[in-house]
Image 1 (cartoon, rainbow, N blue to C red):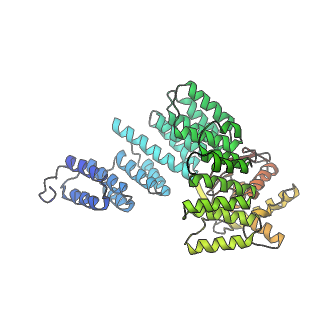
Image 2: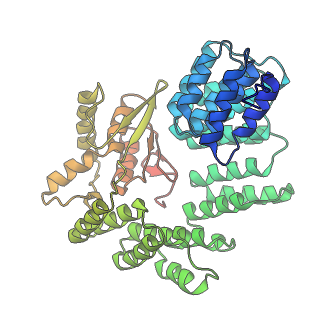
Image 3: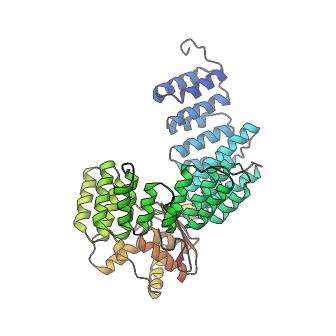
Length: 474
């Protein structure tokens, strides 16, 4: 049909292009889609949008963007397709740039279908805000939803709850949740996840009971969030009531009941333990410094997932914490031989709508001299308040105690907090926060009478008056 030129009708061609995007051989069939598009003498907007989505489905963001930039006049669907493509491709900054351009150009929905597309746009961008922790932009999107008169359905409300919870504003997440009358299982689950992330395990359990009273049937995600709530709040006995062994091991492990966790794995599980189960045990061993059991969990984990670099890093950190530097050297050599690299710790802080990233010992920020002067002042004031750096958190073999303390002060979390004391403190960390930085933030909140919000890979820590919302249970 292509060769005979029988598909020049834009509507028929658009439907065929859309169908080709679901092909099991995308590279070949998307080539046909491009050929088909080129044969249409006057492609309409529907056809342009179909081609963007087709290339996005094959993860070819470059081609999608070229098609998008070539559209003479774009509608809401065009923008939404490109924003969604950028989000799915792991390019959140591009998605935000597109959304800001869309707002500047004042793109408005023209009919009912466009309003639905606009809702999808907001869902995509709220997902990006959740990833980056950009709460200011999240608030703007929430305001824009009201401005456009868009109904807050369950899908959109779930995204707002997720964004507010992951950006540290749990109160606003609860407010959005309570504003929705008809709640589906995803909305309930998102709210439970937010409560769990902030260490409100009892409140999550109460919400679960409320959900049951509302006759909403829980799904697997609901149960997983319930277990996370138990795990992050130390509710061991309540966690036992839900049968999910990986989380159960996590609950017991975080509580220091490592022998019980091992017994559950070896003697009570009706199926072979997955990598996630051994990973939960290894993480608990790292927290409690149990090298022998950690080695056992590590070997089982890498037998199931040889390329799991996180397992190697966790075991290496456990060795370092226990001053077993030969073990650290052997593991790092093994990682190099396998071509593995440790993910660099990075802490982000949003100030006036701009996200700033800090690495260990970072001097790339234009105000780095002021930041380090502030950090020195913080260190002096915290020492006067009784803060002593936890040298066990230093993962290099350094003999001199002063050098150890200096190295700990260069952690990315501390640099971000120092910068935050010049502005507003809301820090995002891509890895688990170390114990020393956790203690550091507690003392900062007390000495400087400031609230510090620190989100790591697993949860939120809200520091007020020298106390953390996690109650030192994370």
